[in-house]
Length: 210
Image (cartoon, rainbow, N blue to C red):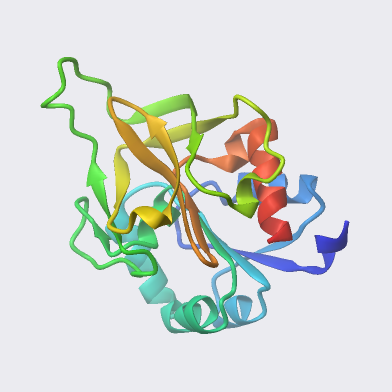
């Protein structure tokens, strides 16, 4: 596999099931390390930012690690591909209703809490379980993807993109919410590819090829 020579750094921001992500990458023949130091970011060919839990805790931990400056340089200047997963995708945005800290600001978007007050019926929050996605634009992430693809979700907040062109997929849960996004080298999935069996395995393989 030609992408085995690439090094993917899975950023340890103190949240998320990092082990599952690394194990899934190994299944597709990708060299991956868990890192939280400046050198780990500098040496990476690609970056994955996973996460579950509170928005402020995630961004505060990145700040405490002292890696935001090098992360900004890698992503915005060097155009290193980055994939945010669940909370990691939300951290790529301007901020979240959940907290008071600003996000990384790589995507012009905000995270909003699910609210079904104006709906005829109420749905459970968090949104949890398997759900479908609808692709809105071409992306290497979904190259040769299986038909009727489904991914695993666990989240109470969803991202609202200010630029519709950044929306990669949407998913129905009371309304169509953004389930993945992409702006050039910056990508994010609200679902967990590391928990989504063959669908997530192929998506991570596609990211490794990006």
